[in-house]
Length: 361
Image (cartoon, rainbow, N blue to C red; front, side, top):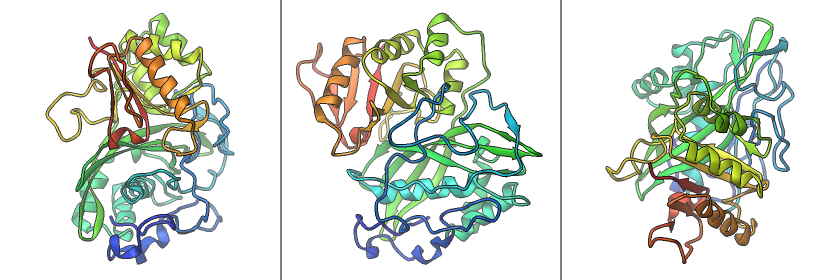
């Protein structure tokens, strides 16, 4: 899937031949009109639908939808006969490769958003074909969509954040973090997931090649640190991260660090364990995330890390606080000096849009 750039991106020739197909890049339910996503706003925002945690903490750059804040358990919120209109995510300022993120997000939005009578893998594949994906690849991606395509009468994806899992010259991993309210009968259920979307780039632009949705595992009895994190309103957690913590697979060092950081900051978490590449992207080194020993933060005190207007001192202060909380490996958009070890702090293009806080065993 190749997407046309928003006004702040390179000229259209960079992105290839399928841009005319993106009239279906945004979806809505009921009688609301659909709109094309990539060019419809002169003032794009990187906040998406806003970060939402178990307490639905308010955010200055996003707010819960009209259908209510998501429940971490996915239980119904009460009678309803419709879902709110889908709002396409758009990259904000400061993005390194906005076209890669748009390609990933539009495909996830297409897979996870449908109106009555359009559920099922076959219909999902047809939505991807409408975006310009080949029929064979559309079927493969639909089959690999996991919980993004649940059995429901209708659904709408609202992207919280799109973050790099890795970015190289011609390949990328974009982690699409989303809420997904679904309609079953007359009740709206609140859920969501994180999808590791793999892309490649050629002369035609960025195209999705594979999907790896989060698979957090079943919930287990929780220890005190996990319970405290889930109850802390200053820690905003997306659905997959809530499920990660409830699975019991997140190390206490991670949980204690979150709680310590929440004493000084409001942190919007993007990824904890599931939905992240198994290896550090482009290498064969295992990532700390799938081991339950890392978390990423995309927004600090309501300010997106990727936004150039976000104070560098806020970001660097948070990075140093992460190290003080026990992290051996803190990455972000700023290269810091003075760590306890030579490699305690790092920076690269992948971490231009978030702060990584990792822990040893």
